[in-house]
Image (cartoon, rainbow over all chains, first blue to last red; front, side, top):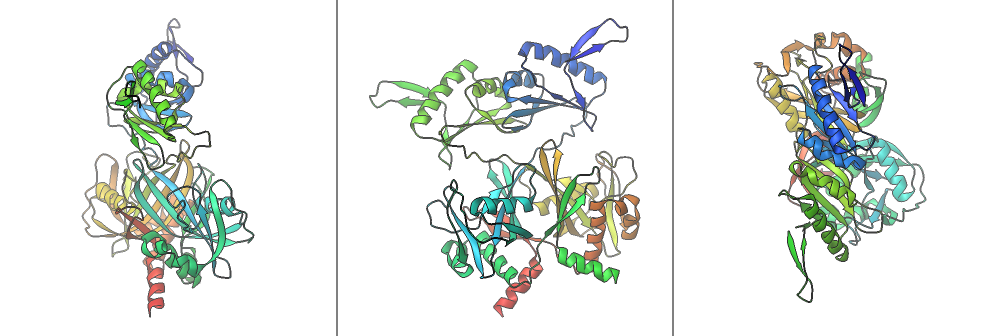
Amino acid sequence: MEQMVAENGVQKVELLAAINDDHGGVIVEMKESMDSKVFLSLLRASLSHWKLQGKRGVWIKLPIELANLVETAVKEGFWFHHAEPHYLMLVYWIPETANTIPANATHRVRVGAIVLNDKRELLVVQEKSGKFQGTGVWKIPTGVLDEGEDIFAAATREVKEETGIDTEFVEILAFRQSHKSFFEKSDLFFICMLRPLSFGIQKQELEIEAAQWMPFEDYAAQPFAQKHSVFKYINELCLAKIDRSYNGFSPMPMTSFFNDQISYLYLNNQDFNQQNSTVDS
Amino acid sequence: MEQMVAENGVQKVELLAAINDDHGGVIVEMKESMDSKVFLSLLRASLSHWKLQGKRGVWIKLPIELANLVETAVKEGFWFHHAEPHYLMLVYWIPETANTIPANATHRVRVGAIVLNDKRELLVVQEKSGKFQGTGVWKIPTGVLDEGEDIFAAATREVKEETGIDTEFVEILAFRQSHKSFFEKSDLFFICMLRPLSFGIQKQELEIEAAQWMPFEDYAAQPFAQKHSVFKYINELCLAKIDRSYNGFSPMPMTSFFNDQISYLYLNNQDFNQQNSTVDS
């Protein structure tokens, strides 16, 4: 909590501790347990204070242990912005004008890994759960990105976890965007090509029923792979890549405009560099 | 609420109304206001019932009007899964084994639109808010995807909204993945090439300070565009594309494996089709 001292030096009002954000708003990160009546009075005093200061958005991050304060905040006009297992982020907009609160995350990101060895064999798995459970279908390793993980890192991690194979990321061959894949959320599925650096399979026990190097033609001959779109495209992309005439997108490190953080730009590196050398020459 | 009749026909227990999900769990969508004590007793009876049935995940969707029930659910062991402005999704895992509850959405998706006319002029805007406000910097139109929106649709929509120009989507030239762009969330920024179908600019009043067709060389000569990575790459991708030797990813409609929904696969169509015609011939 903060003490606010009025100009005449007499009035003292307790406020919620807040830090300023980059957009003229404030962020309150609640940490200690608090009675909801105490919270209500602090919240009202704080909102009046921020209003006088001309603040815009007000964010309150409530750890799940403080779930007793959710109702109070909502009754004062806060709404939900996003939630993670251990906290709920509430938001309020002070100005009369339309709010410019940024949207919540809308997409889950998944990777599928195409790992081909020199014998034209594809690294494939059978999963213990999910839609293909018990069907005998062999599929490429797939998985969901962890928070803050790069696409190329997720692809090599998933292959290592599921099969024990070390790989080097080559490029993204294609990606699919689909909607309402999980409640109202969308899904981006990146089909990646990786080069194997080891060959001895050590399958993961929890999720993987079986893993093997499978002749590409046997994989492609599975009925599901011939009939259905994304699997058919995976086959055709494999073939396109085997024949070395297909360029996907590969990652290039770059620094951010606003800070020193490294992020990756994925682009058609081969065409891009050809272009640049033509220009340079 | 549901009535549960025991096998002897005597005992009746009221339960929360639930529907089964595809993964052995149940989904409760709360709609009408309820006293938290009533909710607690219904929730406890329901959890016992679902446990006996061998159910796995339990989802409770609470509209914001029922924020009074959040604390009760959390005290019974529920945690937050995700939230949108008007609801909070809570989840609980019944089995003794590790939970397989899917992760929340982790990425926001944005588009930037490169629109070049036949006079080698680029469609550019100055924004009224954001980091470039008041700097005089001209930049390409950008924006965030709406819920359930396709990347190509978002690109044409943003250009139309900000400048009034009608466009046809050509392809994605590159994309950048960056982390912690918004609290713990990541950002995928797709740099798209579009072909203009109209030329008379009608700028949007709320967000856009100015919009114009600008000779590409003047745009590229802006100091910020020369120094900083993503902007420098946008310039070089423009040049690569003007010279027609750069292939990006373009969208191809396909049907889902599991239902009839249309989704889009983005791939290097030119390399892919060349490949296919070689195989066919």
